[in-house]
Structures are given as C-alpha cells and as structure tokens.
Image 1 (tube, rainbow, N blue to C red):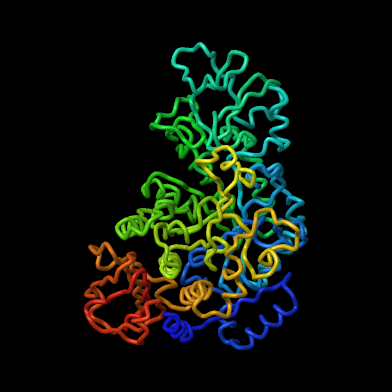
Image 2 (cartoon, rainbow, N blue to C red; image 1 turned 135 degrees about the vertical axis):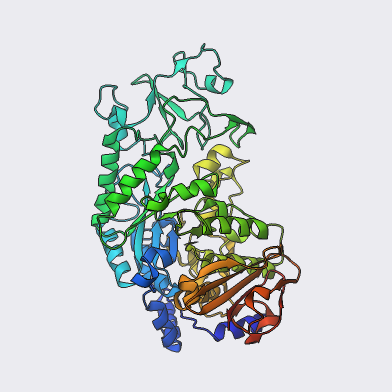
Length: 613
C-alpha cells in the first residue's frame, strides 16, 4: 500500500514544511534543502488563496487552523506555549496552506479554565507575551498570508476581572448590575429541590435548579452582598448581564480594540448562552445524573434565547464598518440545523458569517446516513449560508480516536483519519483544522487525578477525565519534548507517540498524514470544482460509502469514502459512466490514471478523489 500511496502523492504538488525556530541549525538546513527540491510546489503553497470577488469573501474559502496557545510552541523555555512561539512557526502554517489561525484566549487570566476566564479583554497574559508580541504576530501573519482570528469570550469573565470585583463589592456599586445577581429564595419555599438545598446559605437557596457545566449549582453565594451570582461554567466565571446595555458597550469596545490592531475577526465562545430566562424558571429534568452527580437538566432557559440575535445583528453591523471582510465565527452548539440557520440572520445575512455546525461535528461515528443527512441539511439551509465544518477542537477527543473507536489496526486507523480529513477539506464548507490533527496526534488522557489540569476533570474524576488529553503540546520533532519546549517539564506531558508522529518525520514521508493534508489543501486551492463548486450527494441509498461530486465551471470532482472495514462498491451512474482521472487515493488498487465503468469498488476505509472527464 505504501508504494501505491507514494505514486499518487508524487504525481501532485507536495510542498515542504519548514520547521522554523526554535529548532536546531541542522533542522533548518534540512528544511532549506527540502525547499530546494520542490521550488514549484513551494511557490504554490506560498501563493494567496483564490479569494477574489468572483469566488466571494476570503473566509468562504479559507482553511482555518485552531491554535491552543499553551500547547503550540514555547519560545522562552517556561514550558508554556506563547505568541512568539506561534510567530516562529508562520513558515510551517503558510506551507501547510493555512489562511487564518484562530488563537484560543491569550488575554490576562487566572487560568482556572486556561484563558476562558478573562480578567482583562484589552491585554495579553504575560505567560503568552505582550501587546507588542501580538502586533508582531499579526504583522508576520500578514507577510505569510495568514490572518489572525481571536477567541472572544463574551458570556462571562473571570471573577478576578475588575468589573466583577466592583460588582461583588456592594449592591450599590455602579457595576453591580453588570452580572446576573439574585437574592435567592427561602429554603422552606414549597417546591425547592434537594439539589437546591445542597447550596443553602443563611436560610437562602439558589432561585432554581440550574446546573453549572463544571458541576454543582450554577449559582454562587457572595456574603458581602448577600446574593447569588449566576455562572453557566466554573464558579470563577460569572456570567455577564447582557440585558444591561452598558455590558454590550464595554464588550463591543473590547472587540474594537483588537479590530483596530488588525485582527481578521473573532470566534465567539459559548455565544448562545448570553441570555437567561428573566423569570428564572426551573430547567426540565432529563433523567439521571452527570459525572459530578448533579441532576441532568435541559438548557431551554439558559441557551439560545431569542434576544441573543439582536445582539449579534448589532455586533455584525459594528464589525462590518471595518475593511477586509472581518469575520464572526460562532461556537453555536444548537439542537438542530433549523436553529443553526437562524444564526446566519436569514435572508438578510446580518448575523454570523460562519456559525459552527455541531450537528456534523458531533456525529462521532462513521455513519454514512448521518453524515449524508446533516451535510445535506446545511447545504440546503434556507439562508443559503456558508457551512463551517470541524472534526476536532480543544473540547473534543482527537478525531483519530473518536472515529476509529473499536478499530485496532494502525493502518486502518490512519485511513479513517484520512477519511475525516478528506471530508473536511473537499466539502463546500469552510474547514477548521485543530493543531496536530494534520500529523495524526492522538488523545492522551491522564491516568491519575494528580496529573489533571482541566477543571472538568478535576470536578468529574473518574467518570469525567477532562480535556487535557486533546490539549497536549504540538509534536514538532523526535527530540526533547518533541521540539515544543526546552523547559525541564512542559505544562502537559508529551505523548509517547511523538517519536514517530511529528512534523520532522512526516514532512519527507510522502505517505504521511501531514502530506495527505497538504495535498488536500493544495487541491482545494487549485481545482475550480473544489474552490467554488456545488456539492451533490450521489448513490444516496448506499449506507457504506459516502460519495459526492463538486462541480463548477465545466469541472467536476468525485469524492468517495468507504466507511467500513470491508471492500464496498458504489454506483457511478450519476457521473454518466465518465472517465475518472485520479487526483488522490489511499487505495492501492486505484492508482491508475483512469477508471471506466458503472461501479467503483473501494478497499476497507479507503478514500478516492478523481476528476470527472
């Protein structure tokens, strides 16, 4: 199989991936040597994406790459990744074909939730660098055709933010109403649940049964004001009161601060949760308990309330005043595609450009019917909004593990990872790659509670082991700490897979996962059908192979993926029995330049991409 894959890969452009500092001089020389071997390929990788007026705004065709800043590259030897580390890897990002990086929160923070508890929206945490470092990163990104998107956490702040310190100091403080406060109710009130009574203070209990995502009541008592404040997430993350217009003004001012510095837009964290039911009604219980032992409840009164759309429309209008098609990406975890459609703003298209599609992202199994259904739903959304797909991020186990559960053969697991990369990068959706997925990094879950850093794991152990496993440092080479850091001990341990799964090992291996991703991105940049073509499912009753065509400007590409561990066939009647010229495959039986016939048979978990002639 290796020789077959090599044959296909060598037929196409295969730009090298420079390792960049802080690697040794030897690695730098090796990287330069690789560049000299493929100057044409490098030129293609460095050229701008086809983001012109004909194909729409840049974000419609961009490849977005999420960077968890603590884990990407440490530049100063303290064991924690930083902004200068990201900047040092710009060559890598450019040669991979990345158009924009989304950087998870790098603002000042007590790091209770590793940056998602912000204590100052208009600065950089000293652990990650300075404002000057951020300005330098943005400037270097511009030189490398890589835009910078920041994570903006608007639902809540840290309890160490000066806004909350003021708010919690007194009921008469001007900022008291910037957060969601409540007097609570008497513990003797009829209907009070046993869950509420667990959090009794001075005869008062929380006003309802709302449960924090990280365990316990979503209400925390503050003796100084004799009130509870609401927190959807950790108790150190109090929710802002978005019914107060002063909060909106302050939040928009913080966004302008970064827009003025040149960021390309924002990924809006937990954006459906900005508003809560003003009547504070109990959430319906859904049965059972969560990992923390709390009752499972619905979120109909704490998420996706209609008022949030008014805020997003005003936010979109504010961002639209800036040049360069600044973008708003939403972490829109929603119950169905119909709800997702509302976040585009309907026919007016005046809300988010790119709401994240969790219906597709959370399938978490190789189910052809489910992928076909949910992709078709978003493809035909009434707003005609641009889909946004992702299969990995800092809150999910690595895609390598999620989609190959139950499969032990390493070759088959790698093929499954290639399937997910192919689906991500050949669909019409704007794709988001999570750092390290392109080299096949795996989830490395802590085995002892003493090693857990994530608050979810700390409060939920052992049923919930947290998200540390998908946040381990990027694996650059097979040297000390995988080339991530020179520290005695990085913030999370380096997975043992780093000796073979790393950029240095994969850059020169045509069969590697890294080169599979690079080739897909090159195809996406250069093939007219994959740039702007319509997407249409074929052989739609087939439950084993997911297949579709992308068609535009007289060009058509067929993509077919076998989701099973046995050979499977697909009907090609919809392609008119045309000649197929292979563009990319990992099926050793399909390496020939042409395929004719009414059916196509794929090896187990194989992928096939071909030009329809």
